[in-house]
Image (cartoon, rainbow, N blue to C red; front, side):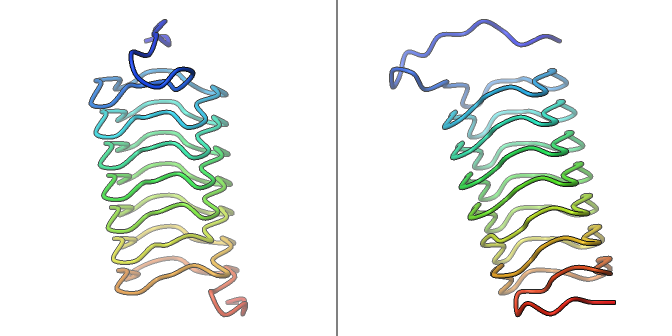
Length: 158
């Protein structure tokens, strides 16, 4: 599926795709700064290298989506489903991941200096990830691979 040609009926210059069914869409390298995608279905979508800075992704279904190398700086991913998603080398600086489901997600090499309170990271690959400054209160880290990761206190695991 290719990217649709869409115009917003909401804020001028802001892409509005809330609750849209975009599963499997190819949006690699797309510029989606500030886009409203809350509640959308982007399962299986290719968003590799996309710029989703400050995007609203609350409650979005990103199951098995490819977000490798994506910029998610300041994005709101509260309650988003990212199970099995590829987020390796993604930048999630200051992203809101409160309550997000990242079960079995690939976050190796990602910058995860974000609020991950109560997030499900069970079984996630966090090898070499930068978690310095991350908020992990109540987060489920069971079975995570944290080898080489920089922890919130700045220490690095062997």
